[in-house]
Image (cartoon, rainbow, N blue to C red; front, side):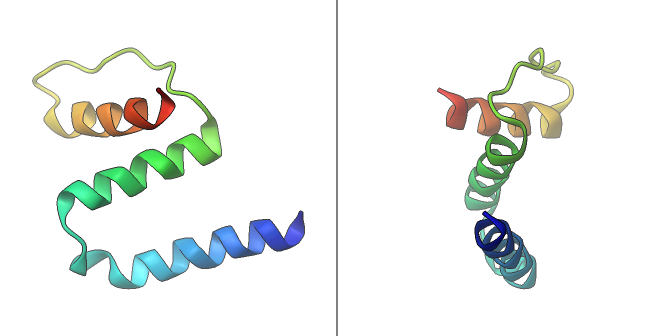
Length: 66
């Protein structure tokens, strides 16, 4: 199991190195996958439409949860 955790942390470090080269849609997809792998399904209430960034993150996480 330790190897899997190390691989996961290495993948996160690699993504941080190239994050500026990735478009916003892919970044949101990676965010959703990250949240799903660390916290499981999204059980948080849907953010307000006025909280645009929070809403987009919530949608990305929820999309992976479904």
